[in-house]
Length: 111
Length: 114
Image (cartoon, rainbow over the protein chains, first blue to last red):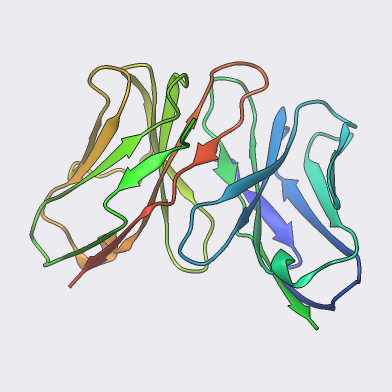
């Protein structure tokens, strides 16, 4: 079945630094979704991507749909303490399929 | 729009008991998904509905698990004869079917099987 990998698995950064993380698939996807999850809560949708090469921003967050359609990237600029959490990518290969999730990237922001 | 609502938020049960969880999706959404998440992992797909039809079930979903969405609105997920391995966060998400589909999650139900 479809599998997603996320890199890095975890990262520690200083407040104010920029962050980059990525998600790769073993197969072609037509939709990528990026989520943030806080402990004990459900994932919150950050950005949705639907076309290869698409670049979409949401405040300090920017995500891109890779041109190979097998990867996606999330960047966070000027990190702040509330960015702490686990970031998940999710994707699907066709409109009738369910969404598959990656294992997550755990972000820690040091003051 | 009050978002996706899940009840209860927490459930503690003894092994062998049956449990049922409820999900109320965003009102205009016609798709409803159930996922399971264990500590340190991403959500794993269990099943999804389009209106009242259950369109897909994961092989992870044993015959002890059953989900319904009788009128195409709220959904229930029942686990019979619970096992300790069923302990997890059960997440519900809803969406509007289309090419630009996006999932909106509830806060989840945390199940602990003792």
